Image 1 (cartoon, rainbow, N blue to C red):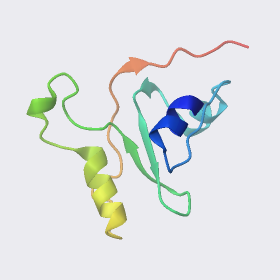
Image 2: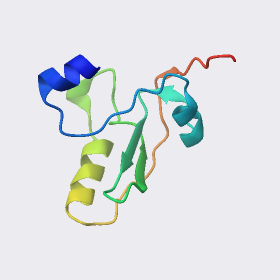
Image 3: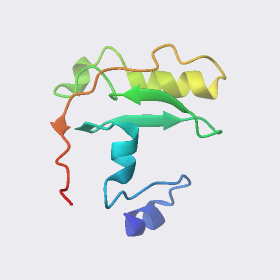
Length: 94
């Protein structure tokens, strides 16, 4: 990820959660699962990217895009949470 971030010139922080402590803290259950924070690092959206992961051309609700648009427009997030779908997280045992 470090090499990709440098190559793509990402201008945002990311986290590599090797021991899964952050995933556990936020209650993550699936991948992908989105956690969107505002500039004060307050969680403002939690859920899935959109409503059709199998057929992108048939997406009707773009949950993450809409949440980002609301956030960047200083609006209340219209849909702050959705259920997640995808592969369940395989938790490490200690």
